[in-house]
Amino acid sequence: MNKTERIKMVKAMEFIARQIPDEDILKTWIDYGVEDGDIEYGDLDSTIRDSGSDPIEKYISDDKLEEVMKTFIEVVRNAYNETIGLCCDGVQDYREEEYTPPSESVLFNYPNTENDAAMGNITGYMFIIGKFELRAATVPKSIESYKKLIGCDNVGFRRILLGTTKQPYGVFYDVDCKPWGGISGWDVHGNVMFHGNLFVVNVDNDNNVFSLTEDDFKFIRNCSDWYSSGEDAYPHLGWIEYADEQ
Image (cartoon, rainbow, N blue to C red; front, top):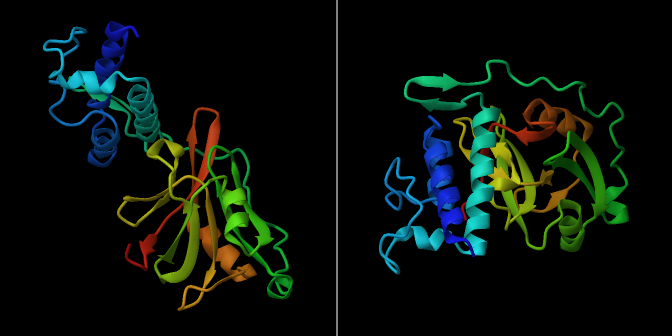
């Protein structure tokens, strides 16, 4: 282990992350990157001052350094996506133009879901992070199917209220997805509600899930938008409220 190189890396990321002028993005960095007070602002010294008691030491193990680097990439990407950029000594660099997808990815031929219940299937809307993809998906109604569809080992479920009319829907999501997995859901105030891939379905008052209708697909699409990161683009769902408490 080259401790000097690792310390340089952590302190450089900490210094740059603190130049993002947005409290919500900065909170992600503090929660999953470098905690407040562990590194004095502007400290780029690559030495360990007091072995065993210097907070920098907890950031240089393989696992922790990997987590900090992934978080750094995510907060910088979010600053770019939200046209916030960086601000240093009164100089701010930000992207003025909103991202416009090269083509609209919508469902022109909406799936027929009338026979889903009889077949033991469910059709919902997939939000796929890291790809320019927002599409319908039909799978057997089972936890294992949702895991495979989302690409996770631990699937969670939340009942949400969507849009200004607060339409109820159910969302299956990756419980273990970290912030660098990509933001896929926001509330009306810009607070992050979900990370990673989502599978959105219909839900009744008892949290029984069933297929979306054509009107549901259109409504959810109207509550969706796109962000880009470099050459990648990904969809996110907006205007979310949690309808259940966890």
